[in-house]
Amino acid sequence: MDYRESFFNYLKFEKRNSSHTVVAYKIDLDQFVQFCTEVVGEFNVKKIDAKIIRSWIVQLMENDLAARSVNRKVTTIKSFFKFLLKEQIVDFNPTTYLTLPKIRKKLPNFVEEKNLNHLLDDGFFQNDFEGIRDKLIITLLYATGIRLAELLQLKDSDFDIKNCMIRVLGKGKKERIIPYPTSINQLVEQYINERNTKVGIKTERLLVTEKGNPAYEKLIYRVVKNNLAKVTLLEKKSPHILRHTYATHLLNNGADLNAVKELLGHANLAATQIYTHTTFQRLHDIYKQAHPRG
Image (cartoon, rainbow, N blue to C red; front, side, top):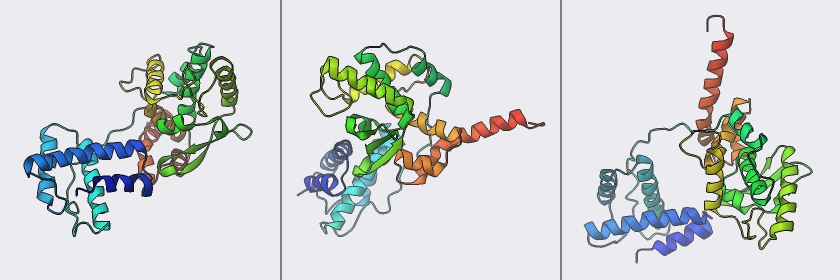
């Protein structure tokens, strides 16, 4: 037995990983199984050692796979063998002492405040169902910093309009409450009225297509890319860029790092600290402007 199905069920039902995470793990593990089969002649979890895994890592890097992608694939194998050890299927974990390729840290890209304000305030969106929906998509991603998967899961009932709070179900099924600007209430109500009157709904989801079906990933990507292209020259224009922008703008305007961590739903502070680069740049600019010898 290769125990892959047991591992995937463990990820789904015990670890409560998202379907996207499970699919990614499956792809990585299938690639490793194929490598073992081609190189060793079989895939036997009890015969795999660190040497075989290192050979796989070397092959991945020789194929010019980015260090970040290699690390993700190795993380999958590490998780797999931790599971096998926990279930007493293997006697040792061959990934314990593996050294991963170093990842060059990339600072997150973000959209300038004036550019986003220009997009949202200066008549770029039509006053019809599609235009109102698309503006709501951009607004929610920027105003709350939620992930794409979280946006797609939103229901009308997740909005507490009276207190300007939104309930979000994040990674690991963890719920968090995020405040949003009062001005969004009017846009949400306008969108829901337009949707119910002219489109109708076949789902409980907040965001739908012109036919009333649930909105999907490619639709959100297209909306974000097409609209950000109107106000920024950033090469990457994705929903996650708006999450980066949300965090960066909060910190640049004096938000506490721990508060931003909670708003983003990060498990640890290290994940949030990547955004402090712009805060330090802003402090440097203020110093240059304000200090007599700056």
